[in-house]
Image (cartoon, rainbow, N blue to C red):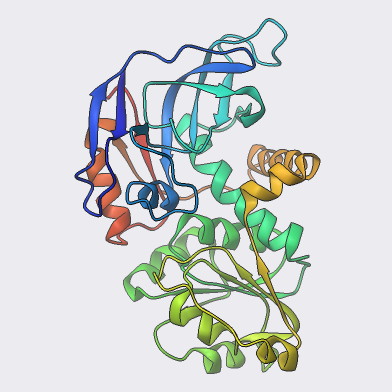
Length: 326
């Protein structure tokens, strides 16, 4: 089978190559999946450099999220041959086949194409964990979402709008604003370059944001501490901006807000019942058509470099999907 293997860590993708590997041997408790679509996530890119908190030792097959059909499973498995599934693991998704622990898979909503199912899980479960599970989002609240063209941020906009919240989408790329508005019609789209507190204050009539979801870090985090309403929450999801920011303890004390770290995968592992409930709710909303993942482009696995470079160069509005076997 073809697979995208990371043979060494590098900052320029030179350690990645598409190679032929044997189809994985399925172990008890695992499900062998023929992969129809794999979603590229920012951690996938970071892992090729050794810059993610999970640091697999090369060589490893890239790809943490997939959708496909069951080829083989235990007789006692909840999955049967031919079932459409989505999920994955920390690695192994960017290949034609993967043997995945059954606990890491769930049925793909029948209404979704494989490409949509591959784009759904990580982004929407992260956004749901952040906004609803840890953020206690309620209808009518103001939500400021940074990095608004990224997969998690777009999922957060989609979910927040579905919940009846009022959303400010912040992006450092003005040319992406029209596409963001077209996809999910946030209540406002602002530029997050420089100072933006005054814009947030004006849009919210001085209230500021009840929840700030930050996937960027760096200067965006620093300015966001000025944008959180009293009693609000600043949800730390990632550091796409590069610099991991710091905060003096007196700032959340005086302003009366909480800084909440969001690790959706770890949250689900520590609280498996909650994780299962979150995943089921995301699947339900997708099945009902209440939410829909934004896909920027679909490319064959053979053109994997195009996908990675598009993410690295911040060209995307939504997810990029790789299709193995093409």
